[in-house]
Image (cartoon, rainbow, N blue to C red; front, top):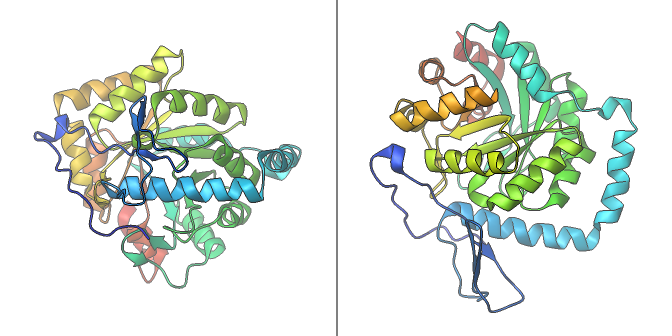
Length: 333
């Protein structure tokens, strides 16, 4: 089980200089430790404990995918991917293109509705979780896209949820998971994903670059999630160094040390000198700037929009509401 008490990693001050936590990968078959890019591999000991909650999730995800690949090897999965490619109903819907159109037409921030049954450390969010019904509700309310959590252990989700959300609406769908292996990219495409989250703190730059190429080859759009300006700058440098650019970046208000979230964190980062430079670089690349984490009110959305955010991923505020459609209306005003 994931340890509840984790070593504290206090962010440095000022906020714009905070680097954010990194997730080590856990080795289970050797006693060595090594560094790969920005990711440190830890000594394989039964007594090893995660340093932060992101690391706890990453270790669990590694073990999960290792077991899954044994039961359902990659060649079998690739057959399923080819089947999806041949199915007109599974054709990628162009997440970024559609979001750019929505942003261009809007007079304010766009909402991407997040679908998840549970929170990793808070438990069940919505007991009557019905993916199809919620997806239709959010589409009718005006969501620009959907983000579906497919992790089961921490978020109570599945790839079946993603397929169901896609089938219930015409909206583009992001597959939301902690992606550590190419295997997960193919899982997402076979389920009908149009875009895929990549959490920069969980990936070395070499994987980030490689995964961008695989995602593009599958006709999907990569969405990079960063929780600090340092992470965001490193992502830009890594992709530019490989003659690629960021397509969409989520500047998250979530502190992955403890998974607490606040949109005010994002506003603070974006209004700093480094934040303005980041926005300028994203604009030069033609990239969309998104945000997420702890968004509960229209005032917070307006604050993010004023800081330069074009679209926001909103989950718990909508999912905890007794009437998700009414809550959506309140958020957009």
